[in-house]
Length: 268
Image 1 (tube, rainbow, N blue to C red):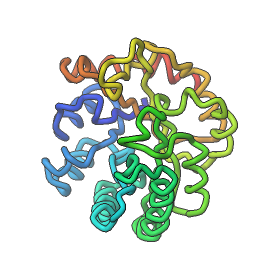
Image 2: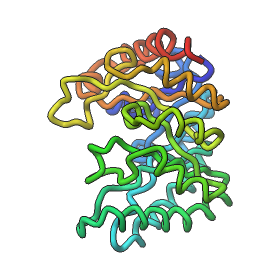
Image 3: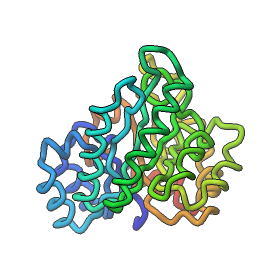
Image 4: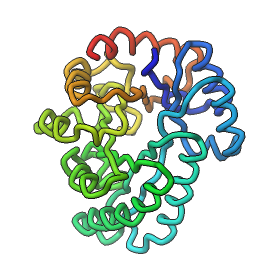
């Protein structure tokens, strides 16, 4: 249980208080927080709630959305996100970099991401925060993430001391070069997130995540490859699923714990 983290998105309707209380009841020692519920609770109050419960924040989600033709507002928001991560005591700010801008220039959008990360990395380093680039499944390229492979994320991350990558099972499992790229990532892996890919895919593909073991991803193999890099950080269970969101928080957290023990932990 020491490495299991519940990503707050798994119980999307829960407040920071409810998320932390649920984790504490189930013996989960870490939580991945999202900026919006943290803002609702208050930054200082959220940090105190986690600290008083004896938990740690495994990551803060999310920064990013850096593909606009005019990035000034996004850069300012990411600077705030870096400050929030530091205040919460986590060194990992998950970066969902953004989709194709209105000009439909995919190559240009990726370059804008690289330029923005170069600028933000200086401030991240000063704050002791790693910008964790999250490559996303290609189905999200248009609206959420123009970095579609771990290789593309690493091409940027390797240029900056304070930039790493997220290995999210849902987003990378399909990649034919995944094994080599995980080995390449090595110590650049800032976060490992698990769930499963469900079929048939729902109308809103964003909500097509399931509990580990319920879908098509070989999580045993993927986890072994991540572990072989020496990654010893938290492992977040992050699920976007309307039925799971509608379920009782305590039941969901209990099932997350059971699936982690039976599906993920044996591969570590």
